[in-house]
Length: 163
Picture 1 (cartoon, rainbow, N blue to C red):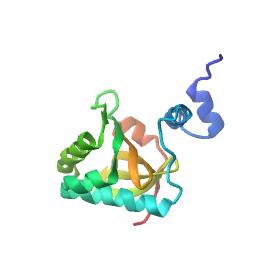
Picture 2 (cartoon, helix red, strand yellow):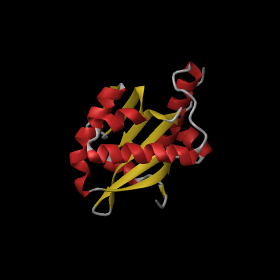
Picture 3 (cartoon, one colour):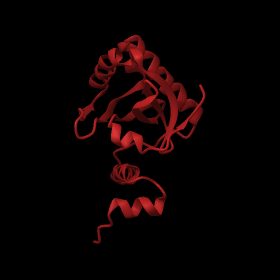
């Protein structure tokens, strides 16, 4: 087997190396059958993302559990100097979302398409603070990926959507 560096793959796909890594990771999970198929109806996916955001802002644990798949996975990447972790299960992810509530007080959060997935971009003082992408299947969030690495955020090309 020949290994091709993500930098070369990214050039071919006209994406960043980080995006190429994420695409490869998603592809491996799908081939292994671990990720259920994503819902095709983007407007319905936005309803789920909006419900998640409202529930996390309100600290509504039951509403968070209603939009999370029981086996949901949350991956957070804070970069080399930030906090990075992986959380599995609806209860644990809902707990993380409630804890993040305190950090949201001075953030502006907007919709964005992230590698074709519904997502959220938060900014503080006009600069990107974090970006999140959601995989939604059967009307529930099955995967969440958040990036809060300032260096990598500065290199992303984000498409923001009006609410």
